[in-house]
Every structure is written in structure tokens, then in C-alpha cells.
Image (cartoon, rainbow, N blue to C red; front, side, top):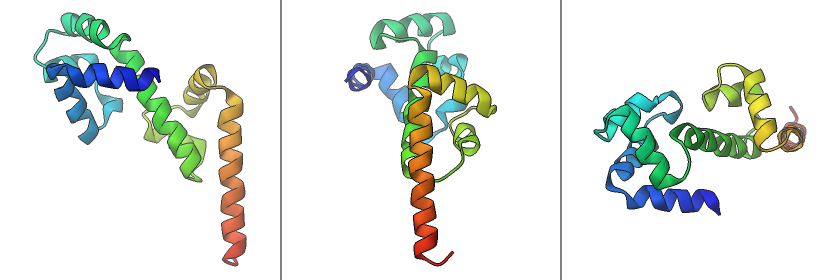
Length: 130
């Protein structure tokens, strides 16, 4: 899988491994390119080139991949509305999130996950007399 390969490339580089460790404990969604460059002690422009050369995609694209993966997990594992999921993955406008998700994954996936979760929540509520 391409994401696993990118993660291996990231972890193989000492500087980027430091970045990855930080991101596991902090909110990546608010981290700017300049902040990431400072974390690995590189100038912003050089960091951008360095990151792309080692990981194969831009820092921005990488952040978007992480957002989408997190959103997919949340859609599959929770009954939260899309507006809350979009906010939790760093999109302040649910419409922008839906548009981006539809381009990357497909709107059918978005609706099927939400429908499945809604049905599951209804079944749980019915089961417990709610």
C-alpha cells in the first residue's frame, strides 16, 4: 500500500522520524509547513523539497492523506455527524470537507459509512429501549 510505503520512508529518515513522533502526540491538522520545518531544524523551502524527495508527496498532500484516513476511521467507528467529524480532522467548513472527501474517496463511501453508522445507532437505541 502506498501509505505504508510512505510511512516507511518517513521513519527511515532521522529528521522526518522526529516529525512523525511529534505528530503522533500533537494535532497535525494545525501544523503548518513552517512549523514542521522548525521541528526538524530546516529552512521552510528546503524542508518542502526535502520532504517531497524522501516521501514522494508534498507535506500538504501528506497531511490531507492523514486527515482522510482519520475521517474514514471515524465514519466507520462512530455515529458522529459529518459536521463534527470534519471539525475533528481539521476542516472548519463541513462543505469543504465533503467536497474534498468526495474528490479523494467518493461521496458514496461517505454516505454509506454514515448510513451504516446511523442504522447501527438506531438498532442500539431500539435494543436499549431508547
